[in-house]
Image 1 (cartoon, helix red, strand yellow):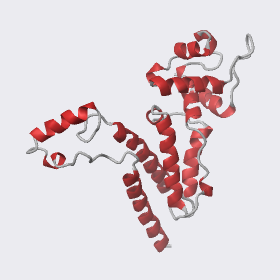
Image 2 (spheres, one colour):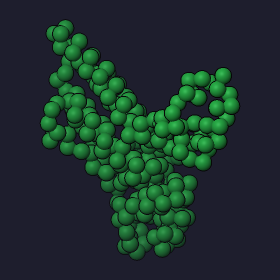
Image 3 (tube, one colour):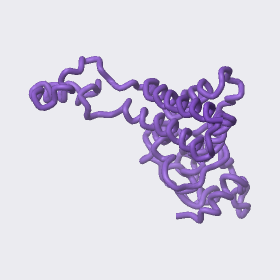
Length: 234
């Protein structure tokens, strides 16, 4: 595991590749994009130091000029894949449409890179491009009477909902899926309808909202209620 301070320096200070030996053939961004494209095409499990080096046309040892190991490579991939956070100041209508736009853009970025939602969890160092998404979301909630903890909790709810919606859209063992297991599971549930009457009663087209609009609106409804309570109290 790399030193977390070194990882922060890499993401935030743009630590340059080692100057020893011949001039670096690529930028770190190019290395990150190569690894990102590999993960997009074949899944994150396909990304290894050896495979990325091979895609770039040099040896695994040469890759260590750019990153100290896979953890640094993953961190650079994330920073490349998250893209530029949307400018929510340009969205009219206040905090709610701004958070809706942020959620839409976040879902779009995560759909482009299906491995991204599941690798951006846990205690880890984030880069400036990734952190900008949280900054924009928090800023959208400024001046509404919410304290710092409430604003951060609200942002975490929105991000968590978008992440969970990506899972619901690809779940493979539920009766409402359209995958290969769906038809079999519907037959199983129909045969045991006495034990699972509510599930058995679902129409064939009943499926979770793949875009997550229902859940997002319910989260924002609750947040609107809290904001209204704060305003009435002041």
